[in-house]
Length: 475
Image (cartoon, rainbow, N blue to C red):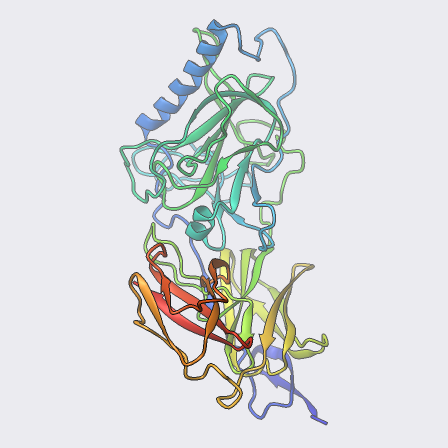
């Protein structure tokens, strides 16, 4: 029976390791991710005036048509919001967002900032822009999540659509972008207005100006239209809007806090903590998981849930609002739920988003369903992945089967002495994107012209159920 040895290693990490000669390396890769590091303003002064004009135009148009739901004679409390983003139904991540910026309460500039909690999680710029909304960004993979519609914008409160645009480009990364954003503007029963900006192109609701929406109803997809450094929702609230010469434009900050000079009470049904530590995802990858390319290129994530016993597995965790002086407990669990490795990883810095990963080769040596388990801040997230037996050359009846060319262009040829009856192409996330079943004539070529450039996995099956998986690159 394999003996179990307890090691006490650097920075008091407690480790259990069963049956392996060398001590596993628990030093992680990764670190901080900073969204909008250059403080790109969400709106120029000109664009801000356009937004207010669009809101007022919608109010006046609906009022002229006797379709405006809001009545100036009604005196009712402001709405209480639910959170305005949610993950797509069925999406495997534990959560999908982080907060980079709150409303700037200090009207002076530059670099004179103050958020509702008397902190500095906001920004302004030298031309006088003070951040006027809440920036909720996609995390952990902002562009992949946008492209796959994985983060939805929903109505924080019921109301009437005053305006919407969805046709503008959504992969912008620059200041003073000539195009304004894609948006939906909603007026509530008390007359207040919520602005939902930076939406993905062609994603806004199919409802029209004047239509009513319910709390939690789909409005669009988080995108990067207008002035933006990446996919995020800019959520901005006005407690009052001037129109027809009455009233004034009054900005609100939905959060109650000691340094909120705009309003005294919260606009949230359940106000989230200022710092809100969370495990956004615990994932396994087939290669180093995080490559953040220049905006607006989609990330290469190498997500995978299927490995062979000899493979290298990358175990990654993605955090929101990482707090200094805390730690994570990490476990790799065998199919029988015993721990291969257990260790603690201390967190020494505050990061509003961070990622950490470890990689091990050949340690998942038992076929079956393994688990990668992360516990942080009282929360445990468990990610399951599959390990299959690695076939020896003698056992693999398709050992002489190969493909060419690789990298491929528009056609893959299969070189084999066996009859291939099924072929399946999966992307790097494991999602099947092409399946061919030709039991009679067999498969000799595969058309790849409709595939985007990138890494894929081709699984071939012979007429006696032999299988072989081959990695290939489409270019």
